[in-house]
Length: 154
Image 1: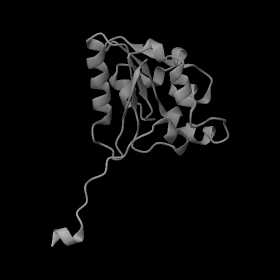
Image 2: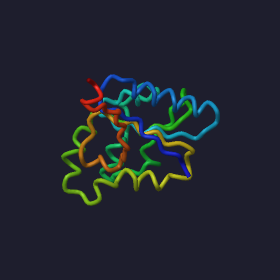
Image 3: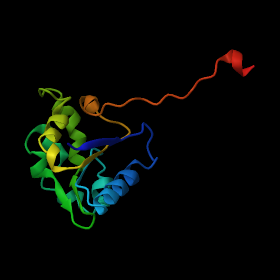
């Protein structure tokens, strides 16, 4: 059973892509079977893995819409040693296209379940703004800062 990690932060420019790509490469280097799922339409993690996002025949977009499986759409990043379920600008349209589809919130989860035994780790890069239709596919426990009462501040 694969361990699934979602690299997320609500703020942009905090190193989510760099962390995801480097973690995937490090895990692959020690012999772990890794699938990196890029859910950012910019596709920077895809490109950072040595996969040309413009040349993708199938992507995470196709998986979400059900026209491809993870196995069909994942690409092996030769230089990095792990598999990439890449993203490109097509993913921007998924929010609109998913509105009328059944099980839109669980499509990614179901697609990943089909390849669960093929990977030791699945790393999902979540953009700082994720479409509402994909939100439940990325459950998160929010981290809250400790708050001081006003009385304590005096």
